[in-house]
Amino acid sequence: MAELIPGAPRARIVDRGYRAYAGPRSGGRGAVVTVWRQSVQRALGLRRSPWAKILPVVSVAISYVPAIVFIGLVALVPTDELTDIDPLPTYGEYFPFIQAAITLFVAFVGPEVLCTDRRTGMLGIYLASPLTRDTYLSAKAAATFTVLSLVTVGPPLLMLVAYMLQGVGPDGPAGVAATFARIVVAGAALSLLYTAVSMGVSALTDRKAFATAALLLLVVVSSLFMAVFIEAAELPGSLYALSLINGPFNLVQLIHGEEPLVTDLTLPAAIAGVAAWTLLGAAVCRTRYQRLQVTR
Amino acid sequence: MSSVAPAAPAALGADTMVIRASGVVKSWGTTLALAGADVVVGPGVTGLLGANGSGKTTLFGLLLGLHRPDKGTIAVLGLDPTKAGPDVRARVGYSPEHHSLPPDVKAVDFVRHVAEMHGLPRREATGRASDVLWQVGLGEERVRPLGTMSTGQRQRVKLAQAIVHDPVLVLLDEPTEGLDPVQRDDMLALIRRVGHDFGIHVVLSSHVLDEVERVADAAVILHAGRVVSSGALSDLQATSTGGVVVEVAGDGAALVDAVAARGVPVQVEGARIYVTGGPEVFDLVRDELARLELPVRRLEPRRRSLEEVFLSAGLVGGQARSPEGSHG
Image (tube, rainbow over all chains, first blue to last red):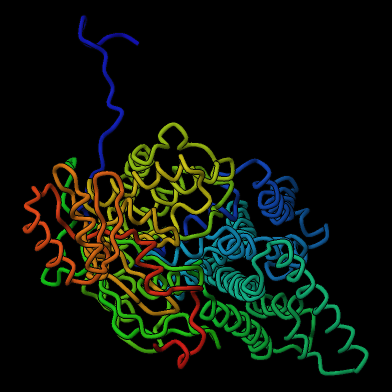
């Protein structure tokens, strides 16, 4: 390195001493934002080892693959020939294509965001900050919601933008706005539901693997059981609202104004089912954290 | 921002006490953790002494506002943590007892994150994280993942995260747990620096009496959920039941014989003569010194070790048994 002043002695400061801080502090709100940002980064594997990035990257990539394929079809096939091939899926019909990716992502994100803090002792350090138990959970829920929205809102939004650029999107600004709103509301409903359920399950254990397994069992097995039970007992189809797969995915179709796969499932019933699971998950999580002893 | 020279502990406003707790009762189910503890902690470094299960960690949780006491009142830095928990915690640093920290996070990222949680802007938090890791002797190790660090290094990281946001008070829960003797000496020296050079009030919990003697200005002794003794270390060590230490110029044998002849226990260690007894032995020794016309080099209350303080109170075990049984 060249000397700035010829002949001057080289020196470096190795100890700046302990410095008091008298600047601004952002309080509880700043703490929530910090925890939210750190949790999003952690769930996505950012600033972590390459191994920690694999699952989130693969899950997100899988959820976007069908959208990219459909966009490619629109881009490569002439518009007048598009009607000759199998019709493109609607926004509501898109989710069954990525059901596995969403389920995998849900089973991974909640435990990563919530269990890790208890396992590593970070919870005690978090709660010794201006955070309260409720604001801590709010930050964690916001982080989980944000990450899940990458796969529930992102792909259909990408389809909308690409279709508009190709000239096969909704008609007029009003149509675009309405479709945009439906995509956001439907995606938010899915994210909200799965945030609450994954946090509810993750609150019950500090082991990520246990929470992930429990979530997969809850989402997949309960949905299969519900389907078999309803069919075998010839119960009303509206009970599918309580399924963690059929209920929310049919709700998405209803929000988009489409005919749901379960024909006798109404919008109020689907909303009630999703709301019930959401409230149950949130109640389990909050109750568990209110009772946790965290100082050790 | 200016660099701070060695400073007196931070000002506390009208109330000069850092912590005031009165009649604090806290149960965990059927287990009584605190049975009416009265705690007063002043400025400087204070040791919270007690056996395992005596209620030290529970008291820290209450001071931080993480739990509500079943009975009693608490004020930390003049604030009630049950009502103003976030405000209290914004001004307090805390180092937990456990050693587990996120293994895949770098020390500097971890400390910066804690600084940001306490409201410091990102740039300031980043600078202070590096600085404070240098201060605790981890400057070269600051980019290492926490999972690769030794117990001693993790204890230093825990101390760094507790002081990175420049708190008024820092609570250290068993900060020397798991350290070898050399690491323990280093950690105690660090804690002393934090309390006396950095201007941060320190409360450290420990069940090792010697540590508190070496680093603290005052001590609070918890036993079975109650405070059995507290005050400045010099006062605790020089209670009236400790007796007196005498050092005379020349041969002190005459004094030893004279005191022993009055039926008072007396012991000689080198040049020092230890006379055991209550306040009356001061008068006795003074009178004998005058009668024998011995030149005095030292005449002072005998300072007991905290271990003697602990044992003299008959303190065995630690955990409170029941609200009724804990009285007395």
